[in-house]
Length: 161
Image 1 (cartoon, rainbow, N blue to C red):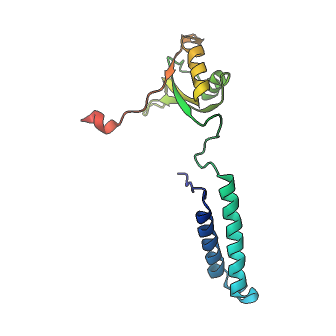
Image 2 (image 1 turned 90 degrees about the vertical axis):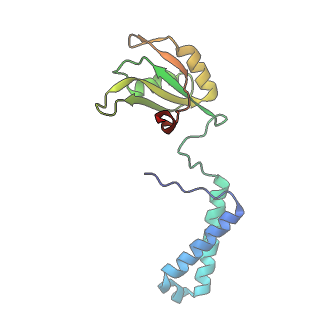
Image 3 (image 1 turned 135 degrees about the vertical axis):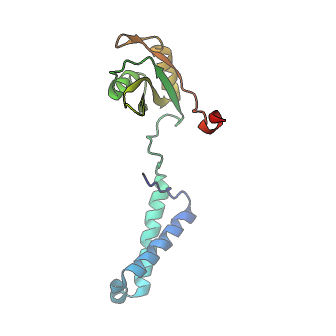
């Protein structure tokens, strides 16, 4: 499980971060507060926290785990009729000729863990359109690929009813 912290994007958030760091420093390091004086340590903590908060706010860190490229819009591409021996790396290389590939997923059977013969590739919208047009019907490992825009996954709770 990944824990993702939002990046501060306002001065208010940076100041809150500064206050939290200052208070943590003041409470967690009592020997330092006696040597340097409690007020001096608190002021240093506020200054350090404000600096860190402003730097993070200026960077506007991307916490989604995806590299920002193009206009940021991505498309999921369905790739069907895959040969069972196709690897993620081979699929990434095939689609990489048309633009940056953000992710590749080859679907496997839950029980046997064997490939099911289809997968999904995520790319920037413009590159995805070019890849779909070029690769639909193309032969790959002796099989004609079925390539089209991926649909949103349907809610399984509604299907059961």
